[in-house]
Length: 261
Image 1: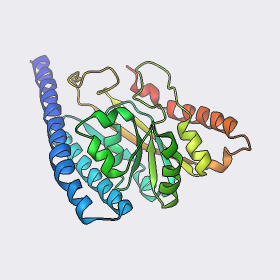
Image 2 (image 1 turned 135 degrees about the horizontal axis):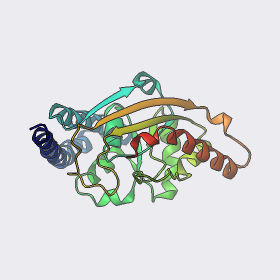
Image 3 (image 1 turned 90 degrees about the vertical axis):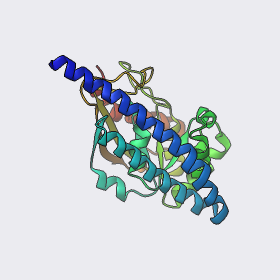
Image 4 (image 1 turned 180 degrees about the vertical axis):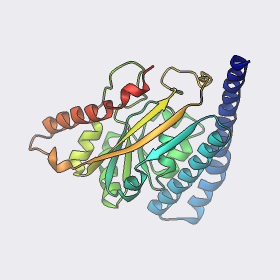
């Protein structure tokens, strides 16, 4: 009987997750992309202001999506040290990337959150208009990257970056790209480190969305230390970027073992 009850709970989580993603897709496509963002283009002529309003809208919609998943008991999540994140201005937000929900979780608590996104997402009909409306920059647009970051950070914004470039590969050591370190050094901004853990793990790289565990997955998001960029700056930016990337790899790996099963 206990095993049957566990299986029923597992099946319910699969159905609840499917419902959540269906609502997420319909909300993103029909409400945000088709209606709301088009209204913003008509009535808000200032591009920067329009981007900020769009980012706030995205944050609210992500919060609602997570509320649905939690209410349906598909997942749970908790933040530690959230006050530190709310006070941050003009800095990079660097996090590990164990799950598909990482950006949703972080953007839900950051009403203004600029992002550097993968080019492949522009082919996704559900999110491409969201990316454009929010003013996110695509990682393949090298000529726009640094000016975008400079402008955003100079105006008090925060930029969320997953320096792995994609979700972590289970049971493999973290491998960080140097892009985040280069941006921090060239723009001379501090870095806030965030640790994301999920147990039991779900929505990992190469894991099917319906591969749900028997027990309810719980995300623990810890707002960690803030790195002063002056401690890593050197005359040779290439060497500095390498050292900073190594340090970020060390810090992000400290909690990573909790995601390995």
